[in-house]
Length: 216
Image (cartoon, rainbow, N blue to C red; front, side):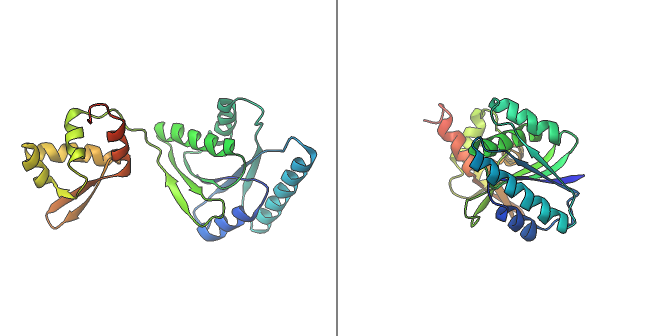
């Protein structure tokens, strides 16, 4: 069962736009996380937004569940509340649209944990005006090996595996295996050019180089 997971703030507009633009033909259920404000005005706005969301989803004929999170608890407890709702689902798309920053961090952290436990999950973050979106990375790479550092340092410009093998004085098969591992961890991106494989370092790869003390 595939579920669409959304955060909800004080407006239902983002929810409507996501559902209408993405579509729901492959979605079995929509799960919405929200919270009630502490002061009366904020609570009233939250209640109104939830009612608008329920009305829209019911009229659209969509199965849904709305869960109000207790954000007075610790960060990990909020993540636990999310996990308890999503525990039976193995495939999910999480859209971070509105609500408090705590929502964004909690949903993203849940996504990292779920991905690490082999759940089929992706997390998409939108800007507040919804003009831009980006899928957030859900893998945390391991420490680089010396050979991997050498490869990444030589990939600021596009190079083929044969080019790398000649530069590093290694066999093509050795470099090819190392490139496969780096590509799997999103540290390089490659494409086929005829019979050759051309690669370049990704932004994540550059971040790791910046953090590695051996890259001096």
